[in-house]
Image (cartoon, rainbow over all chains, first blue to last red; front, side, top):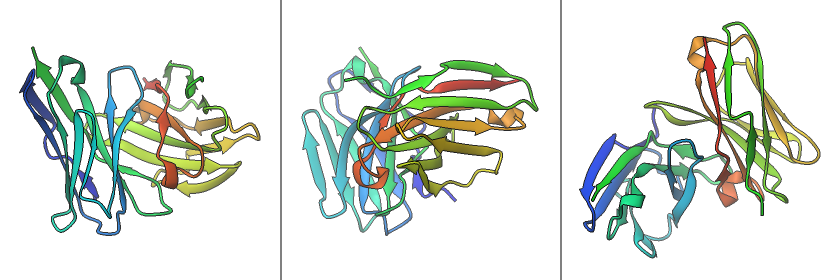
Length: 111
Length: 114
């Protein structure tokens, strides 16, 4: 039973446009969410987080939105750059437990 | 400061053998977690160690085990290797327990079982 889902295995976006990566979860007990980016042959690197008490968190070109009633979060990248091409993982946790990761979405930003 | 270091980077083993992977966390980090990444499955949690004690364990068979030393370095062992164990094994460290702080990941060990 996959508690964190990323239903789009891949996404292609033109450089300069907005990239929207989606993540759905099933457990309403999740209270903290993270997004990680992963390049080939490297470990995932932390991008941005959001607590369940917020509905938006922004850091430069990256914004994460949380809709608790829909159990949905999304990562917006504006403007998208070729260097953003990577696999993006969302992760969620119940307080005191380890993070559960989604299967990832491969983003390709086309020049 | 140095990041999370995993050794070796690549490993090829034969079915039935055992393997030990090593992870050195960021200096000062006391929590080490291990994840298995396979295509289409994302990152599957194996276990977390904090101050030499296993705090959490994922849903993996007993062939997967680990330990943490007093200097916070951690090892993961897989015995009686199966073809399905071929994966990227990622180690992540955290200042406190991972649940509170999130992770910094290493580059991983790519294990191929033939």
